[in-house]
Image (cartoon, rainbow over all chains, first blue to last red; front, side, top):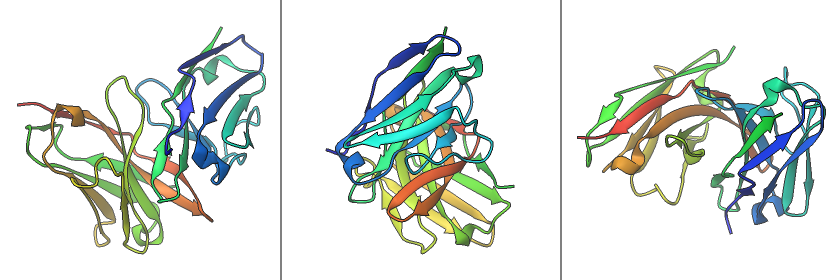
Length: 107
Length: 120
């Protein structure tokens, strides 16, 4: 199916490591990208093509992929990492897909 | 520095056509592919469609019958038209640049977004 599934919410203690996952059949064939969105702001690309970081994104953000599941890992989460995270990929018809989003709370 | 800026009416009546433009600065629009994405209040992101640098388009299956995306190279702008709108089309509409890496796609630059409300 052409869907990407994310957990609605995840929490992490300050300075600890958190993994946010995205599951979908399309991820068997295509890379996942990850976006961070803070309230009232546009999304910001944090990981693309599975594990590449745009300029300016801290190296505590990393991505990985296993079969039909992509993961975004934040190693040493900071207060400013709180926000919504969306995965995105494509299907075989070229349609672009978004996951439903995961709300990350840093405790 | 790539910048994108959406513009258009913030209020559209039901059954009418929503029209938005995205002005691109910093790069020639004909060299890249571009996309529209929307986000209903309090909800997640939804892909609307792309226009590729070749001029071809791809639209979300759920919106395909109502959507047109076009480019005006003379203004370095691309546009969205969504016909027969209902309250369900109320959303923040974003324009974004699409980067193609092999078979993969990602959005590297986004506009700030513009809220469009459908109401009589």
